[in-house]
Image (tube, rainbow, N blue to C red; front, side, top):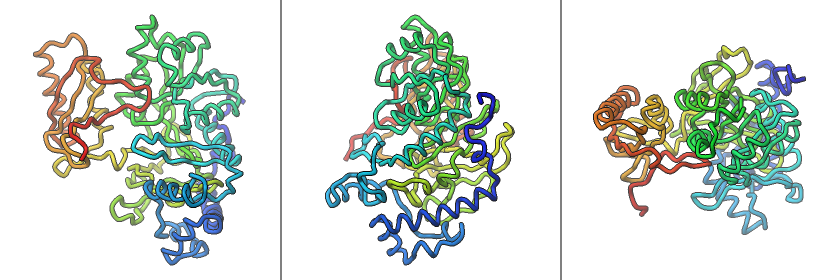
Length: 453
């Protein structure tokens, strides 16, 4: 069993024709289900002058003018809290008594968005996460150190539950347990795999020596990273792999059966889609017009998600706010399936004199200058985004022991590379190592230099 390549080989190796046929069968069934069970979706169909029966082909579905935005999702949850006696939204299709699990966004910008689960939805989540864990080499009996937040995040308790379901041994310390406690459990339990954000993997590199240990001595050989850009950025990935002596895997997923993970190829190839039997999240549209974009190898667009194996509150044509690129050509690693790259959050994008700038791309470029920099940086905005004044103010930490002359040379090198590759000019402000706040959760790349109105 441990030698097989897939958790669920029959499903994960389906042909494109089989995937396409299954997809349409499930989409048509799910549209009828949502229309029958959800007042929100009935209103959506009515407003579009359409019915589920109008959708007979994939192109029919792509042209269906029904979209669910994050703002609408949150608004209809607020409405259901006052009108229906529960906070799970008028998108809820299953009976409330069947909702046995809940995940949530952070709620850092206001009311959190909740995702309800039925028992079948939990089983779907366990299944697709097991596929990802298996691809990165986790096997039944392996000890896995869990360092994501252990709240109601999808990669919190649900990830622990999925590891247990596949027969692994999660050590659920959680990021909130603190660095000292996490390292203590790593020493005691000797895990072979670690689950955390890329920022936390970097943070532990710096903090472990204070506890009398280097991270490379912990015996961890696989690191599952998610929650933010980083593991797919060559310089960041290289920094983590060198320090830990471990292979880094980039994961992107969430509720509703979404799962994708990078492979073992020496060069990052994007993330293999693992759950095309549960959802589709490459129904690309133009970010401004929402018109369908032709999907071919290398296509870039705004990703649209539809879950067709979800009971409680299934999203239909949900605008994920991710700018994504799809790869249809075979991966050189030899594993089948499409791959995706998440290029950035559409709402994180900055516009500097007409140039689109993604903070994750800036971070990756800065990390190319390791070890002369620590890799920590912030883009400091003088006004609310997305427009940002040129030159773009970037605060970054230099490494210890760099003299003033060497720092001037470093600044010129970084500034030139930013201008040549990312096509904008930067005002670089170097600060001492340790100046910028670290995080055990998602790293922060933007700093407000203005007051909210």
